[in-house]
Length: 499
Image 1 (tube, rainbow, N blue to C red):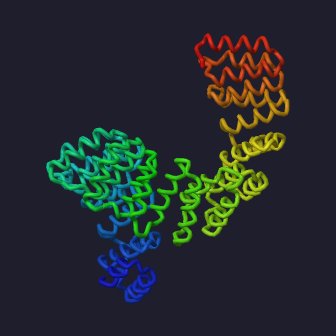
Image 2 (cartoon, rainbow, N blue to C red):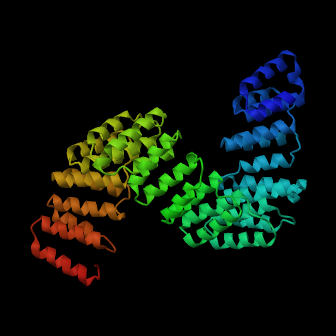
Image 3 (cartoon, rainbow, N blue to C red):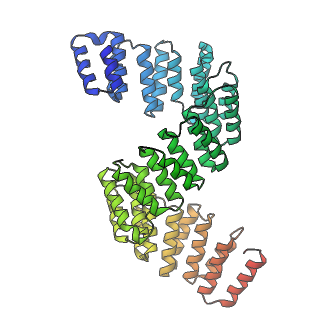
């Protein structure tokens, strides 16, 4: 048992397998306590399937093994399996402990699991575990994760005792739902009760502040973090950089980064994304290079941010360098990364590379197709755009707004009213005509195809035309040589108060 614990803590799977073989050869695997520790060792070493296999062979698993299998499923996001295991435990007459309930509650994530979570809550109350701090905190987390902020508040308010973890759970719940004012009121209440915030408290608040772009509160929380000497914690540093980046304060984001002695992947990704989001593309590419020099391996988030910084023909060589890194780290099979590469090659002026990248994608998604279509239209290859649009339909992929806009533009440029009408029908069937970009493209297509009546009929259906709508109909009249009518539409636009 001592060895199993040691190998579990050190995550030494090979040594754990050897000791398990010796246990089996001596017939000790029938001992419930030893079997429990074997399951624990495999779970801790990341070999969950083996842990599950050992568990299934146990004639009478102990509560510790049940807990570990339920929690293991939940951690792997196998939520149905976790709940099914918990229900099997109940059917076999095993009495759950507080850790069992915590593990089961951890599997309730998403509104569809709310009824199950409520059922477990009732069982907890009946068993008298609702007075347990760890169980009550798990209930707060469960209700927040299942979309019931009210349920989370009710549990928190009903707690006779609270610790920093419970306070953090309810602060995180308010922050998760965008109730920043309430989150900060609760945070101040926690301080008044004498509880010092922990790392997770700050992470919850910083993530919410980043979403809301609340720079003032972000600076206030930053001061608290600095006072508690938590700024050097890598996860906190990454959250601070993200928050300042979202608020457009790259100066502060860089300052936080510079204070980190050895930035990890999360910290690099945060600053890389901050640079890209704020249009500091060259600095983003320099940071990516520094990251490589520091020996930090990129992940999908890294390459997506770096590729987003390649937007001009002069960036093509940088983009190709990032692509090499993608291949070296086996990231090319990720469909989002593949689509970003197609888009990057198109933006950087290399349609040939964009086509080549598209062909490398095993199962192109709708995003892959629309990116390729946009690339063809951008580069004036309108026939290929329409050919790809037809192939996309034959593949059974429903075109979205962007794909339809590209196809309509290609029809307009080629002067193909027949194909344009066919695509207009597809737009109507998909219910996309209510989207501004699509309806402008329809009007523009009919105008370029000299189908003025069709363009006018589509335009007149627009309930509240904006500047782009008016521009499209004025352009349609001009395209057809109807100067007086174009001026009439322009005057009508002015009378409507559109500027």
